[in-house]
Image 1 (cartoon, helix red, strand yellow):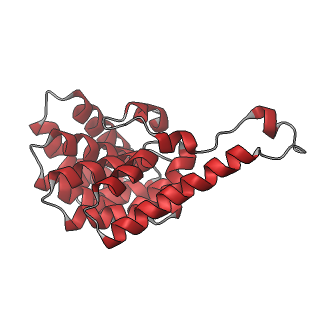
Image 2 (cartoon, rainbow, N blue to C red):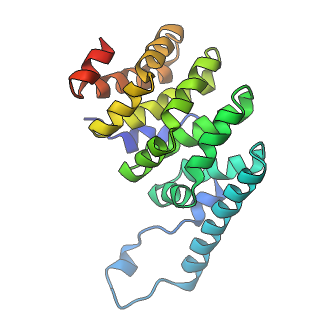
Image 3 (tube, rainbow, N blue to C red):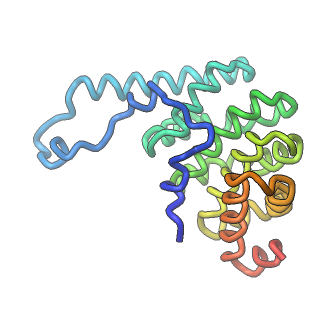
Length: 220
């Protein structure tokens, strides 16, 4: 099966992010020698990263249209696993989903939020669960329907559904329950010349079709 974490490395809206590089990375020179403590500069970088995410989440709770805060969460959401988890832990996924709902007609907000949720959904089961638990699948389907001709929304919305569909049975069922299959099929039909929409849509349907009988029936 496809390694979806790897396949998302070319996220269509990925941006160079200072915040991403602030996140700590595994360094064998430190992990191999348990007696050594993490250097102070790495601890400081980790604390700064968490503060940036927390501040962005707080800002969006006060003013969901804050584009700078949206961009900050996006920069972490398309980062490595630690970056994605920082957004999840700070309740950032729920805030992104709510912003997606409230500003359904705002294309710029939809771009940011769909792209961020695409990044999160490409992560591990913890990340996928955060999107599903926040009712993010339904919000993504609504965005796809509202912005049928917006290629960036279509790319990232389909990418996010693809990430969820790559998960276990419960995740596949979440896409089916939100009428995600119909949204995926519509995108495939309407954007036949866009390779990203086609890849994500086909991969998502493949993942769902590998599910239980209800999933298979939804694709049929």
